[in-house]
Length: 387
View (tube, rainbow, N blue to C red):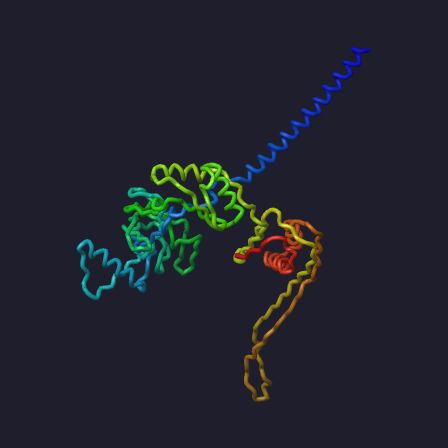
């Protein structure tokens, strides 16, 4: 009996140990899942901020595109002829006084480029070439050597090369034409060479300032905490929700390595509030996740007004001695489609509402009108942005 009791007790203890072990495993899995969810929300610091003093700069210049097959500027664009004369003068060719150049194979253009931070002389950047006059197409053209200047007037790059124009244009003898995409602008990949480096003041201060791309007090606090864990307490400070100051090494070489390590740390940013973005030009509606609507009922009708103008000929009686006259005739028609009442319960997602409205054949303008009405009524639990 004692052996049986001991075996029964041992079996109960083993069963209890298994239950405890299973509970411990579940707890561990829940902790791992929570950590994974938090880490999935985290993002590298370099994607959330920009380093003050490390920025791109814009360059612009004026030049000529040659080699066009009769699709360049017309004779009414006089500055194109003046530019051609100036180019010829640089090569020792002088035109007689009063001569106006007429060449449909040349177009005056503006050349723009983006100068990335840290680029040094010898590196190449892409350029965009856009027509200034009435050139029909820049396809097949070549940009002559064009200096590119920054806002300070200093030349930082030189551009030249053959254009890549994605658009196509065709015209018949009768004047009918077909154009696909833009033909008055093109790009030159790697078409400009850096001639002078733009100075940076990133090494002039004992600290590095990080500017948040999306200002937020919560995100700034998370950034300060993450930097303090990496570099020690007090390494980072934030006076507002737009920037964070970090103590940095004075040695430029050490500062570069410090910034590389700094921008690689993971930070959990503040979650963006639910938002609806409507593009009034294209009718595009974008709804972020988590957007809901409070209980509401909406009735939206379509009012269609048609105004047509015409004329009738008033022909008098042959014996009346009157004159034939044209009398204007205006006709106004008003048509209103049947209204439908939509009623949604609390907590319904906005996506379901939009799907319901679209199922009735409503246009994007109707959808936007309903969304604006919901926002004005306070039933839209989020932000409405119209661009």
